[in-house]
Image (cartoon, rainbow, N blue to C red; front, side, top):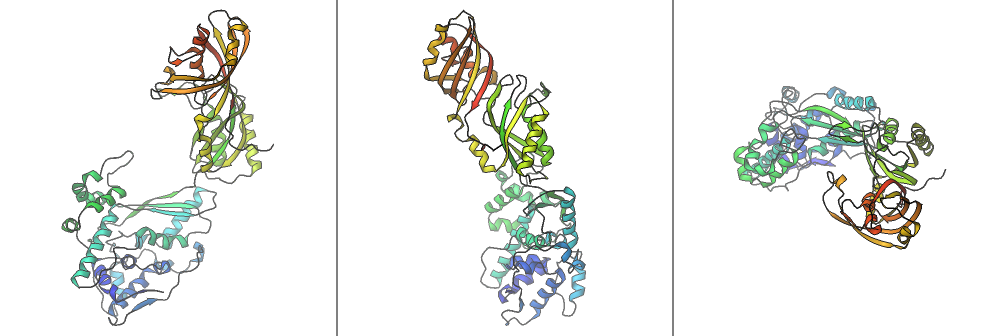
Length: 524
């Protein structure tokens, strides 16, 4: 049972006189019945009028015997009733005379609620719900869950504070006990009304409200608390909702009362809903890739706005995933990276791709196999294996303890002085060689200058001729192999050149394995 009692009478009287809509009045009376907010606007207004006219001594003058129904979504087409109640506003300037309820409601149709700016009046009816459904249907999404969110203009927080202080002031004047400083949040009330009207198979939709008077109403807050309102990137205004809330927490009640009417005055304009946004949660795809080209970067190679190579590992994989999942964008990550001229062989390098706002999200194991084959058939520069859907949490395991993992490499090395087999044989006996590597000159433009300690766990040499040999290394992840060979002008110590006491350089480098046991290997 949800009801208004005698203690709510002065609150109802004050807010109705101030131009507050019925649903906001219920919020300020802490009425928590979700079903009650879904009653037609005219019915709520009449109930409030009757409540104020009845005998004050009757404890529960207005009582709606409405229990909240089971959590069951109601299809839009099943809600025939209430269709005639579209676009009726709720505020009235004064308590109407008995028998004149309908006329009073009609005369208030032009009023905009002084608290919610019309959100709980104009945007709760069937016409707007249909607009939301049409937006989702036209977006052609595939989904299994339904999340509904609302973005509100920041000055609503100011108006709610002003309305609440007006209520507190009225209760003090009447010498009545004051309820706790708590109301039903506008977002919650709005969702209670809209959510059940949406179709069963909706997923995630958000409504963004805006109001032209935001800066005007928040100007005093910026003067009183300038530290709360600082320009931020990608923000058109400093008056964000969080900044306003922070300022309201700092301003003393007496200062607020000096600058704002409490309850707030009726606004000149109604809120607008310029955006209805549809979004699916991100989908994550993981696998391992091999790179067979020495002329292919992992990610797009663009310098000063100019593309240096026509494609990349990231693009060759993602273009197929983007097309199949119908996503807006993607984010690529991997367990380390190789240079453009380095091949990745063996079982490949683990990678993950986050597909942002995908339209399609359901894929069977067989469909993922076909998608993997399509990627592999599209280029001879890369191959993908173990392609699978994973969770966001699973991706974290790819990065866990990354520097403690090991990787194996094969490097073709040149020396300026002639060598014999015995000159390099000692390299096979070196274990757990400690290196100190300053950030290489070639990556100093994108990585901070630092000295990194790394380990070469094992080495095995393979003699080719007087000036060439191949070196197989097992190293700590994050080791710069090229710099370990040529020394990078002494920035890596020790290095192959210093160990052999001659100049050494690297001609070819291959990654033979990335020892990260992720993602799980799939059966063929």
